[in-house]
Length: 487
Image 1 (tube, rainbow, N blue to C red):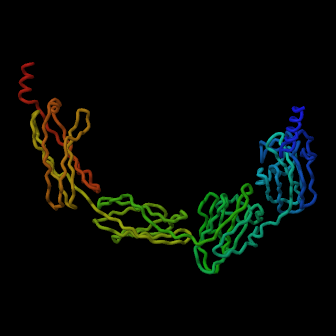
Image 2: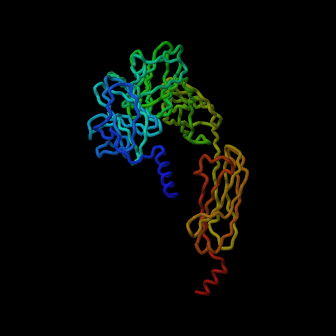
C-alpha cells in the first residue's frame, strides 16, 4: 500500500510541473496544413505546444534544432507593420511561401526568453505563417499568442524627417522602417535599407558629431538643399560621422540597418571633439647629420586624417602635409627648435600644436692608432690611440679588442677619459699590451679599437669610431733556440 501511495504521489507531482509534457494528442494546429487562421487584428489567444510534433518538411531557418511546432497564419489586408509576441511561449519564426518552400522573413526570428516579440513589415495580400518552435522533444507548454498592427516610424520617410535640437539623444526602432521607392542609400552601407530620417538646422555654425550606440547601424548626412552626401559612417565604424553645419542651412541625417539586423537604435548629436595635429619624429636625438622624418597625425579622437596642413620646422623652413605621408628635414646646426604643426580634417576641424625638438650633434672620432709593427711573445709594448672631439665635452670610452682564433673580437682592456671639445686638439688613450705565445703561434695579433660616448647620447657618426691594426709576433729567442735544437 505504501509503495502504491508513493508512486501515485510522484506521478501527481510530475503532472503538476510546468513545461513537462505528458502523453497527449497533438494540438489541432500541430501541422502546417491545419494552421490556426487569423482573420482579424488585433488577435490574442491561448495556444499550446503540449503534444506537438515536427513534420519532415518543417523549415529549418530560424531554428534548425527545433523539435516540434504549431502553426498560425494571417493574410495582410494592407501594407504596414505587424507585431507578433508570445508571453511565456516558444521561439517564433515568420515565413512566407508555400509548404516545403517557406522563406523566413528577414529578421523575423525571436528566441525563447520567456517573452518573445518581433516587428516586421508586411505587404497587402501576402500570407504570413507563424511557426511556434520548441527546441526539445517532448517539451510543451501553454502560452498567450498576440498579433497586432503597429504604425510605421513617424520619420520613416525623408519628407517627414524628425526635427532635431542640439545637443540631442534620439532613439527608435528600425523594424518599423521601410525603404522608400526613391531611397537615398548610404555610400558606406547601401544594403542598410530600413531607415529613418532626422532634420537639423543649426542656429549657429558648428561642427557636429553624430554617433550611434548600437552595432551595425549605418549613418550618413546630406545637405538638404541639394541632397549631396557630406559624410558616411558604416556599421563597423566606431566613431560615427562628422560634418560642418552652417548656421541657417538644413541637413538630413539618415539612420539605417539592413532587414536582418533591424532593431532598436540610439544616436546622439553633439559638438565634435577638437583635433591636435602632431608630427612624430623618426630620431629621438637628431643631429645635423640626420634626415629627420616627420610623420604627421591629426590627433583626432575620431580617427580622421588630415586633408591639409603644414609643418614649420622652427628654423625658417616649412612644408605642406596631407594625411600621414612623412616628410623629411635636416637641420643645419644644433639648437632647440619649436616645431609647429597645423592641420585640417575633411569635416572642417582645424588645430595647431607646438613641440620642441632638440638637435644636438655629439660626435667623437678615432683620429689615430699606432701599434708596434713587430713584437716577440712576452714583450709588453705601448699602443697609442687618439680621440678628436670638436663639439661637446664628453666622457669617452675606448675599448681594446683582440681577434681570437675563433674569428671574433674579445675585449682585453678599456680606458675612460674626459675629452674636452677642441677645434684642433686630440686626446691620447695610452694602452699597453703583452704579446702572448698564442699570438706568436698565430704569427700576428689583430687589434680592434672601438670608441663610444660614455653617456646617454649616441655618436652622430659611428662609422669613424673604429680602427683595426696588426702586429706581427715572433717567438722569444729562448723558444726559437729550443725549437732549433729539437729539429
